[in-house]
Length: 129
Image (cartoon, helix red, strand yellow):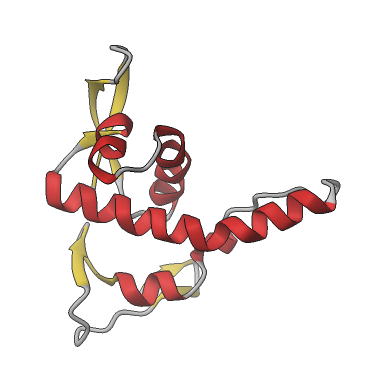
């Protein structure tokens, strides 16, 4: 079970075939993404207009799908930068960029300390599971 302080965030099930091993933690993606870890990331401020609240609520499901796609890409292809992940998954670079830090905060991915060339030829950080 992954914990934040004394609060259980993820419960593991060894019986589920979707389990994988990340950073020494046996993690069940199906269970993890069926709960709502995205509630950890506020996407709207209390003074924002109602349309912002509606947009923030509508992106939760999409974000969870993006997280899963990015994790599967990194597991299959090894360390990659934002543009490499976008190219291999069909996601837009900005979609990938927004999800990478969230995955890092959830301790699902880490920076390698290396850089790779982006589509524009600039250095970008490399990520791995």
